[in-house]
View: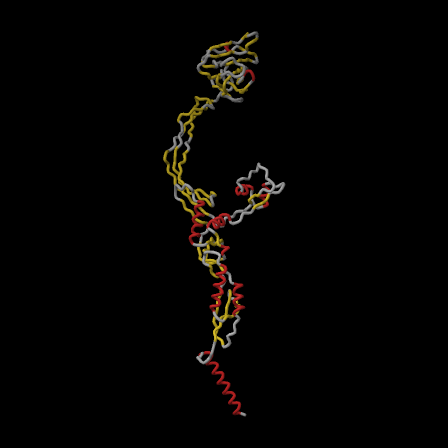
Length: 446
């Protein structure tokens, strides 16, 4: 029995060594076959007998889906690993069917990204066209100085592969980056709708709503069924334009005042006329998507210095109380109708005409109690001389004083005319003392 057991052990060891040598040394005497384990996106889907079957299946799927001139490529990661085995058991049909169901096909494209925002175009040329067009969209049309155009986020270009539906034309990409959407949203007007409510319900201000609908008018009634664009545009990237603008600007002249105690307070005259100067100003103007963001002056050059204006102002206080010593109210002229009986009634004033200078002067110091239009008197000024005397000036063409103003003797109060009931250009002046009419010629002479 012992010999039998030893014999069995020796036979077992021989079989084990023979198998071990066969597995590791693979002598020609051992018949091993190669099979392939297929994985799709790192998931094992089965085994096949020939790796060419995978390649052929993938080529056939691409051929059937080819609807573009661009190069189609698999989007799905397909791998196959060989294995040598004694038993070549595979399931080619089922494995290839699973592969067909799971294989996604795309096109070669260029990813254009701005940070987390990204889109896809067909080529580097299209990507460059998008970038150039987007910059030119905001670049000043009349470039007269240095201009720098940049994006708020630096763009990056990466070659990749995506589904054909994800690839945009250059124009679609520009619109998407500018507006943040490829499809506009519309609202259909219902009975009772108003712009404010439509804007608010779509997260828009009225100004935004009118900006994307230029034909809208708040004064025009909305029509039931009318379509209104309510797209909320949010650019995916900002275009920042910095432009150096050089322009001429005036330097306002300064006013210097000289006081004159010989002139009445309120009287002024220009001793030296002021002249504006000129300077050349260079400013860096920064705009974001055409909206002004900042302006910074970087250089100024004076071309012409301004000339100051010198104004003389009187400081002498105008006395509001008359002296009782009257001057003639006109510059020359003749009395055409004195105070007294005329045409069967009393003519309460004195008419003066025939002057070369139509200036009308206050006959004495006082306060203007009325200045304006008054029926048959036409343009009329009434001066209270605050000493019992009052004078009335009528038919004036224009007035140079206003009610409440204090005037000195000889102040120009208006221009002779023919307003109201008048037969011609003249001054009708009435003089009152303590409420009773008096003859001017008894108090004043030319």
